[in-house]
Length: 354
Ligand code: NAD
Image (cartoon, rainbow, N blue to C red; front, top):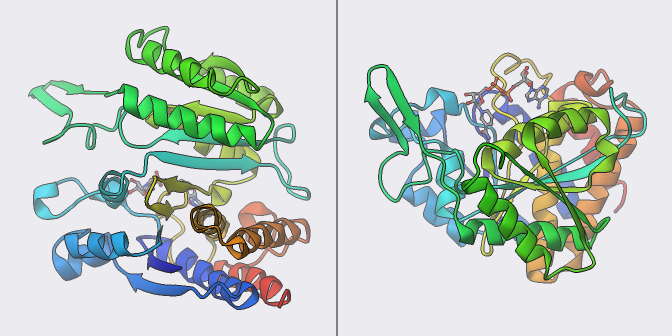
């Protein structure tokens, strides 16, 4: 498996280095024959090549089997004509990574403000309120007058169908229940279509039960009783927001893992940002990116039929759970290790499996 690894901005280099150490241990213990190649994007690439991402990089990523993208300071990138392209958008759109799979669960030994839960937010990743990616040309954000702005939200049948199918397939291997989250009381046409299509796809999966919630109420339900949910399918921005909530409810945004998957490509990416407030201090939690990488290995296992990759993914998740229990983790999740030391502790656990 050839993996391109991009460290990213802010805490990116720190959590990426820890992730790489874990990956190298998994490689040694599970004989994955990994080839890891470092590349740059974001601020480092802007400085070196005059653009946050390049077509040459995209070509390399397309030829690889997976991408690990460190967090990016996307808020800094305002003008595409100056090379300031949002790398997340660039890869999600260019590689058609339509399904953003964001698991969140509570862990034994880690205090959470809510009841125990284990769920997955399945977020549509290519359209919705993301005005920078939902037009053929240009941006879906328009400044009509200096005081009037319009942002377009796009919802299409094709994108609803494929994200719904991803959610129902996932639910088949879990508790066989899908929750549709929407705002159809206000966005009657677009979200009405989203719900209808989810129900239509659901008919292909008669063993799976379905309910639906309006997104604002869903935020309250997730805090009140997250244990009532298993697979949650929703459009792009609602999924972005709710998955930060579920990650934090599980103990910390530093646990927020995700894989962005399409039919041909996949990208591991922490669900959080570049956390400039804690960058360079060796305190960021690397588990978000490490667990995202485990998801990438699992995706590759399904794609390639090579079972050692899913075994490695499971071993990474188990090692993380056991280190959370013994508190050999970063501060945000109850330990007192630094980023580097937390990555090393996990890497050592994997090496012990050899
Ligand atoms: P953020 O997600 O970077 O941080 C929010 C809070 O969570 C901060 O207090 C931060 O210290 C904490 N946090 C985040 N990751 C952590 C970790 N691994 N361990 C411990 N604590 C962690 O959100 P922000 O500060 O609003 O955004 C910073 C930058 O990141 C902005 O430029 C934003 O546009 C960008 N961003 C990028 C992505 C992405 O690359 N996918 C996602 C969200 C935000």
